Structures are given as structure tokens and as C-alpha cells.
Length: 422
Length: 101
Image (cartoon, rainbow over all chains, first blue to last red; front, top):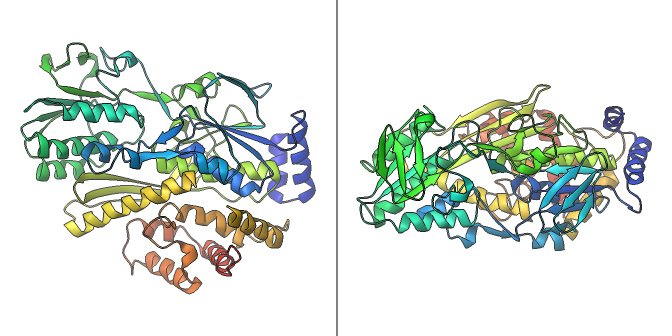
């Protein structure tokens, strides 16, 4: 039924478009407009809210549910650790989305979703929806690092969601005694921002080189290889020689941390650490699991529009989605949100639906005025979001090229956050 | 925002017929949303709406051929066929008529 309607809408019949709107309206008593509710006000959710509100010209009721009053970007948070950005410069308000785009921003937490009656229980109210877009980012898999649980996040921060956790980690690295040890444990499996942990090593090293040059960094990585590995290793050798002890392919069953003692156990040896960043293995945000749209750790979606494979009224964006080749990144989530917004508008108000196209670039800063990048264009195939063509910075690039890549990343940050928040 | 609402109303008004061509300003607006990640009024690279249509075509052609070298722009330009370039040009034309002001 729904599939038939969508096919007909793609055909562009105004009459059928009108009947689709009528149908959407009839599902909610007393509502004059189809209702879209978006859970999660990050790169996916804020972008989807803004593009749906902007594109619907007032014909769709858009509600954005986000627990936090302000958004602290996870992207560029490593630059804050390195001292290249202020905390305030990573903080964004939802005010414009409300005042300029007519989006209802509800600062609350979704606790359950009834898919049959299309109702969402928030802690303080209930919302009805015709279309629900989930963009809840990531949550952590308990037990992925022996000795660590979420209750230990003050002692050994994950700092893998923007905001307070990142501030805490930075203050702990800064407070290390002279010649102290900072350990970082990247995650195994599929996780947010593949180069993120290694940019973090670079930024911590950059800060320590200035303030605590005899300090050491231990990188204990469960993976044998990682994103932009050649570029990072080249940069570390050139800028942070002797500061970083690298362990790869670490057997996590034999590895553990002790947050109360501030030690790690690596290859049978107990090592005292002064700051420790445990980035656990990850899964879709909890609300996606509670909604029952996950299969394993992530929420499978169709590549053409990010619609859940398990519920035609739900779409999943960004880190939580299992979509194919795109890395989990803010840029990816933003790109997916635009495709999703176009499809949802087509479904609700009969506007034109265009073929999906996606884009991502991840910039990583290695040292002052020295950044590298990796990225690709993507298209929707029946099976997945598939990479079309990619690029990556070259090893041995000159300083001018690296500076220009850094400038590009700063320009992207400002464009991207304007695209999200207006 | 008022400008944005006006432009979208304008696009829907003149181009929103049921059987519109894909090489429309509306398709162009959809494609341009990807450009905006880096080419935004708030950033340092020119917004595509600030380019003349001739400049825009030349930029895409030269990135596509490799005459202008850019790791990021090459795959983007190569992903734009004649239909997409025409759609983006239609969109830029509409925006540059100053309707949004």
C-alpha cells in the first residue's frame, strides 16, 4: 500500500499527492498537517529538521526532540584538546531552528516508541507522528573493555560524545605530572569517526609537546590497521618522535583497565597511567534499539532514502544507521539527512523526489597548520549506499598543501554548522 | 528565512508542475544542498549562488578534466552529468535573478 503510494507520487500526480496528504492527516485526530518528529539534534537530526521545515513551506509540522539545550560538536573536539579551538566555538544553539524555521524544539528525552499507534513517550510529554526520524548517534557496548563501565567515565572518559566528556579529558591530560602517561584505547568494530582516535593522539601529543614534552602516550589499539594510518604514522614520526608508544592488534580478552587504581594491563604488564581515554565499542543510540528498528548493533536502512528496513514510517540517519559504505561521521549524517528530507517531503506533500547522492569528507589535524583528509562520493544501490569514487591525502605533501587542507576543514566546519542550525 | 520561503514558493509556483523536467531549478536546489557543506555564505569558499552560470560551468568542466586539481572537487564534478550541471545552472539562474532579495 505504502510502496504503491510512493511509486505513484514519484510519478508526480497532483491528485495522488493530495490524497497522500489527506491520508497522513487522517491518521491524527485534530491535526491539520502531517507530523514529522525527529529524535536527536545532531548532524543528522538538525539537518533533517531544517531541510524538511524549509522545503515544506509550512505544510509539515516538524518537531525536534533533543535532550540537551545546546549542541557541542564531536567533530573538531580534538582540535579543542590540542588547543586549536575554544570550547565555546564548538557550542551551538537551537534558537534559529525555532525562530527562523518554525521547528518545535523539545528539550526532553524519548523513553519509548509505540510503532503501532505512532506515539513517542518523552519523559515529560507524549508526541504523535506520521513520520519518525531517528538520529540518536551512538551508545557504548558495555563490557567491550575489561574493567571499564559507563560508571567509570569520570575517571577514564570516553570523550566520544561532544561536550563535558571532552572537556574532562582535556583537563585530565593537562593536569598530568611532568613526564606522565596518557593512554588511549580506540574501539574495535564499526564506530563513529574512524580517524577520530588517531587525530586525538595527534592533538594530545601537540599539546603535550608544548606543555609537558617528556610525557608519553600509549596507544593500545585492538585493530591491526586504521583510517589514514600511513599519514598519521608519518606525521607522528615527523612531529612527535619518541612520544607515542604504539601497540596494535591488541588482544582485548587479555587487556584490562582499572579506573580506580588508574592502571592498564597491557601484554601482561600493569602500567600506571595519569590520564586514560577508553573509547568503547559502539552500537546505535539506545532509542533505536528500544524502537525495535535495529538488527544487531545497528539499524538497517534502505540506501535510497534512509528508510528503516523494519518500519516504513521510520527513517534512521547517521551513526545509528547500517547503510553500507559511508563511514559514521557528522558529514555523512548531514548528507544522508538531505536525501531523507527530500524523500519524506515527497511522501508527505508530493514534492519531487530526486535520486539519492551522498558525500563525505573526514579531515584530521596532525599538527599546527597540518591536516589530512579522506573522502568519497556515494550512490544508492538496491543493496546499500555504495562508494563511487574516493580520495585521500598523499604522504609527503608539502606544508602549503597541508595548510590548505587545514583551511578547508575550518571552512567546512563553519559551513556545516550553518547548514545544520541555520 | 523569509527569503528562503519566498524562493521555494517561487520555485514551486513556476516549476512545480507535475511533469517537470529533472533539469529543473528544483533539482538544482536539491543538488546544491551538497555544495553548501563547503560553499556557504558563512565560509571562505564562494557560495555557488555567487558564481555566474558561465563561471560555474567552467569550474565544473575544469575540475572534471583535471585541468584544475582538487582531490575533493574531482569526484564531485565527475559525478555531475549534463543533466545535473544544467539543473544547477537553472537553480543559479533563478537565485541570481535576485528573487530572494
